[in-house]
Image (cartoon, rainbow, N blue to C red):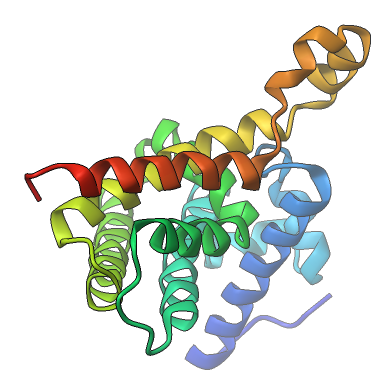
Length: 217
C-alpha cells in the first residue's frame, strides 16, 4: 500500500496515477461505465477511502479524465498540423478523425460527460470542466483556422459535429457483452456495430465539404 502523498507534487502525481488507472481500466473493460473506484484504487495501490483526498467520487474522477481528454485532443491536433497550411476540407476532416480516434476513452466519455457526469458533480467542478473544454475547443479552432482554408464559423460547426459523431459512433461500435451476444444470434442487426474510424471519417469529410460549399461562414 502506498504512503499518503504529502507535497503538492506528490498529490499531482497521485492524481495522475488515478486518472491513468481509470483510463487503462476503461480500455480493458470495454468502457468507462465499467470502471469502479475500488478497481482504480487497487490498481494504484491506494486504499479505497484514500481516493477521496483527490476525487469526491467516481463521477468526478471520470469528468477529470474527460477534461484531460480535451487537452490531449487539442495537443494531438496541434502536433498533427505542425506547420502545415492550406488544408482543404477533406484534409481537415482527416486530421479531426485521426486525432480523436486515437483517444478512445475520450470518445466514450464525451457521451457520459453530457448525459450524467457534468450534472453529478458540484457546480464549481462543473465550471472547471466547462472552462477547460471550451478553452481547448477555441484553441482547436484557432489551430485549424491557421492551417486550413475553412473559416472559423464553419470549423466550429465541424468540430462540434466531430464530438457528437465520435461519442455516438464509439458507443455503437463497442457494444456491451449483451448486445455483442445478441448480434451473434441475429447477424442482420450486427450492421449497427459499425466500423468506427472509416465511418467517422466518411461523414466528417461529407460534412466539411458541405459546410465549405455554403456561402455563409
